[in-house]
Length: 463
Image (tube, rainbow, N blue to C red; front, side):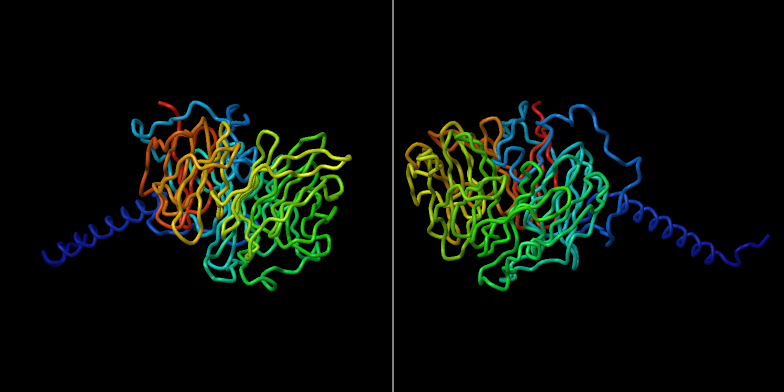
């Protein structure tokens, strides 16, 4: 047996043991914490990194209902309105709890949720990725490398702009430089990939336009087609590709690209794809892409960012930079569909957030480079009912007669959709710290928010 030579050696050995145990404890604590302040997600480049099968989220029956999903930009109806009920809508009495928060890279993609999973896109170092999380726990399930990181012409921000679209077990993801990927939503495996500039023949827009911020319109699934907007002047402004193969089906229009997303409506016995381009609003026949009608709409920047809203047999459109807003109806005349303006006004100019229509009134942010106010307009006449600076520049969604507004500073505000006065039902500050331009998403009574650094989930279950 060997004894320590001196009492000093015993003390030294004891100190070393204490330091070793302390180091191990701190290491375990860091690894077990879901969020380290300022940390970016650890993303391994490659086709997909998938979690083991035991980590797959459980898929109970309540996750298969329409209300438990948020499958596209601005929700299942692409109008920002959720069908969910049983929500906590008085935050002054019951403050929503943060269920989880995880680190995330840059970008402005919103989130889509289905079958217990959440998908979004983000940038990390020099690559843009599609990322999948367990919607209940926030655990990262897989990441798939999508494209080199995009930085816009003005170098304001990097990363993806559009939101993935979920359909029948697949994800359709459009990256800023025109790369379109179809992924298996469960595994993250790339099923096919094309570049919409290459297949359409449209010029790459960053080489053509001074003010250009990358492909931002989210893909629209219509039947067997994916509708996209590369922007070209040779019947290739808007294109449709086969959702199973990525092959070009048709092209239409001669307008530069806008940033707002297309929607589909069904009226006057005619299915119509409504597309906000950089200089117009187009209506196309989904079958062959033939033009049904077109109105001139835009500004000197070709910057139509808000998505058109269909409501009660009329369309509402709004753009910033001096453009204004308009409500117009559609009529049949000599077997043709014609848009007829009901009113046009400068009283509501959406920069990038889409307005919400509730019970005949329009709610949304007004303004661009100067001070921004939040306003309520009468749908029938376009008259301002009230305005406030308590919200400012924001994105928004709606549920159960309430507006959920996320300011670009990361403050979350709940507003009652009340045309007589601005009525605030709660405000949560400090949820996010970096520029928050992505629209919120709501599914299974959980609210999902993100900024350029992290993703968070709030409990909106009524108590």
